[in-house]
Length: 213
Image (tube, rainbow, N blue to C red; front, side, top):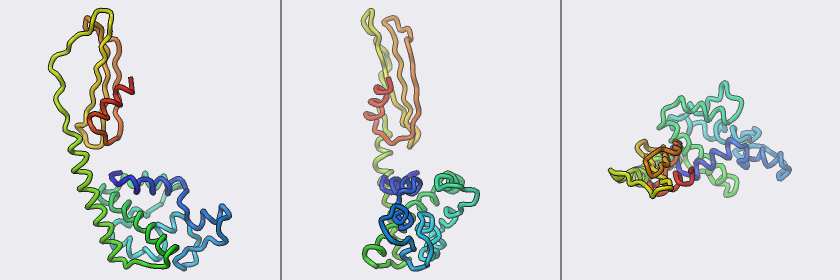
């Protein structure tokens, strides 16, 4: 998902049931009750804290991302995340930032007993989406500019093998790695290829190809 590392880490904690909701803290005998801090009387699970708390009902509806809460046919949070693939990418990205802001607002209530107006929360989400989009364009697309490889291959000395590596950043967000080993006559001794999801510079990508060897 094209979101910042802090949001990905938050989603990972959400999927691994390690988000420190009151339900989790109560289960670990760290607090005496698991009731929602917004006063709705419900048990505060991760799903409740982010998706079904009455405090954020209007926020979800006004954001246009409410479909991300549909957990029908989902047994786990991971199933719900997989289901998001059916949605438009822009909704996925905005919804992810929205969830991160909802968690921040929940913590603001727990630790500071303060609440932010819904309009401010939604503007914050839009700003985060816009800022990360500009960052991704400036950083990752610049890294995708790869110089041309040499036109001619020079053989190694007799009795030696020469190993060449290369990387392709033609598709944004994906890196293709390739290796080929040849002897002094140009005979191929072995080859290897791999495609991985990453945002690497050309130098890092080619270093990963060497490591793959």
